[in-house]
Image 1 (spheres, rainbow, N blue to C red):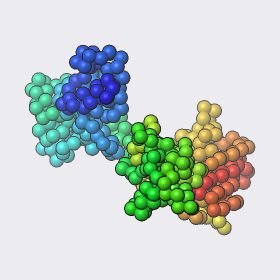
Image 2: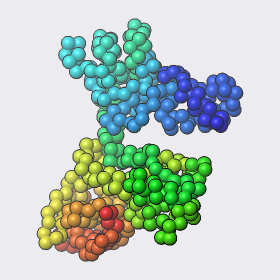
Image 3: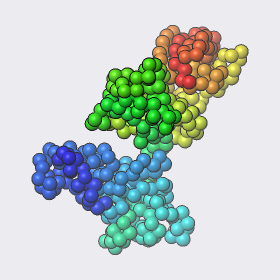
Image 4: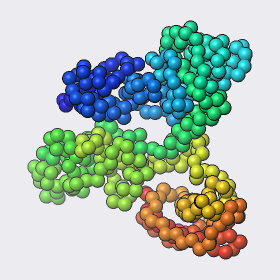
Length: 432
């Protein structure tokens, strides 16, 4: 085991809440400060430590998968540019909602629940009530709290955070952060769908071993590994020799240099690669080591899951598209809507990027409406004829001009009062 791995293992063994420093790690383990620094940064990427402003680097409880609709108190400190006053041991805990303590104790208690953070000023009664009800405290206006409240926070292992911003600004900042997290739910990674304990063969195995593996599992494709666990190829049932040569090694019949993805690759990218290359499975690697496998079936299911999810947080596309309505006439999908301020460039006209997004989205929706298919866009060619002013009413027509088994093409035209202002030709790969 390398020094780097030793440091990460040592950090993992520390108690949650322990403060960590580069100099301390270097001294305790007898390594250079540079080695200690790199290991701590990797530990932060592994979510076992967190760096908090004006506090330092702290050992936290690793969260296997970040909760979409919640934030950790450490993240709140960063969001509101705050200072941790007490309750450092609970900084790794997560909150699911926040309340504003602008009411009397009796009424405020009704809204308090574990996993909540109370935004309040220097009202010591509400601060104490929050801690007693397992709620963290966020003090606004740069105010502080008494030593009694700090001791109570340490006992309850709940953080007290102070921010110089006012209550409205702090609430807005937290709400925005939660909204941005909600948008991320559409970004599904390979690690979310991959099989983490895949069947595999080694290059030194024989065709007979492949036959037995197929009979046992029913699968037709397997990654091939070398003695060190590195992926060196893919073997399928089609690679089995026809002359019953069961003693031929797998390394002689496998497909070499297979296409691989990492666990942090997006499912959308994996779908594009698998569709473009026509492959059924894709090994998931860390460096070259096999850590999982993802198949076309899992990718398609993930894409279908994405399309069924309601969008809770609004991104730029949502702000633009919610102003458009659509209808279908003779297999032509027509969209109509207004140019809004979010679409403008520095000259006050609709930007080419927002216009291109509208045109491509209309083409994709037109395909999905007609055939209910999953597609991966290959190319887009767009021509802009005239600029468009704010509040202009535009119409977009998407017409499928060619569709086959694997590819399809869509022509999209944008009009303003029957004047053509933009045209797009979109080519896409159909994912079966």
